[in-house]
Image (cartoon, rainbow, N blue to C red; front, side, top):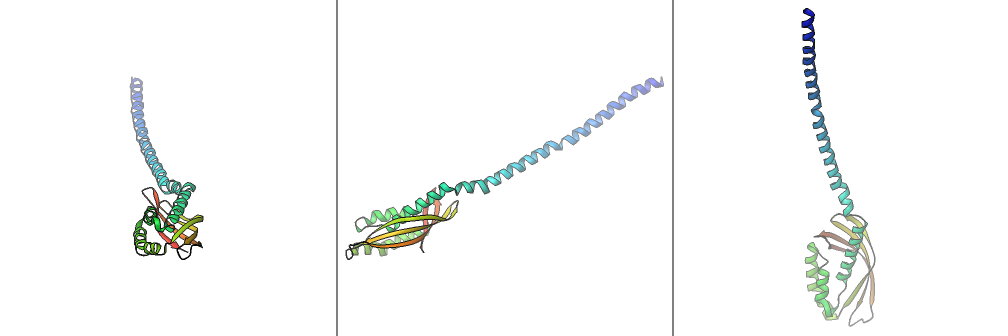
Length: 187
């Protein structure tokens, strides 16, 4: 009879040990999903950081953007340096559409006080042509372009064109998706 009781106790002891072992397994398995979740969050954060800090700026400063900046700087330079006494208001309005920041107010004041009176009085006509342009600096929302310009000027006193070659550092800023000239520095 003692053997019968031992046989009954043994399965009960095994069952009780089995429950304890299962509980340990469950406890040890619970951190695994937490660790996986934490690793997932860390990898998602790293991916987002790489996108914002590496990929997105590279996309905003690729060759296509460089061409856009060069075209905007070239068109703006021609608009700034080309005018005729017959179409001064239209020429200045066209130039202003390429400008932004403090340079816009400076240009407006400069053209009204100096360029317009001289152009009307001496019948000055200037035409600018961009010979070459290259990006010096390119950032997602700012750029500096070196522009080489040939400019011809005629007047009542000198009807034959006077040619002048110059180079200009054109500082650009992206405003509402459009590249505008914010600084114009002859070099």
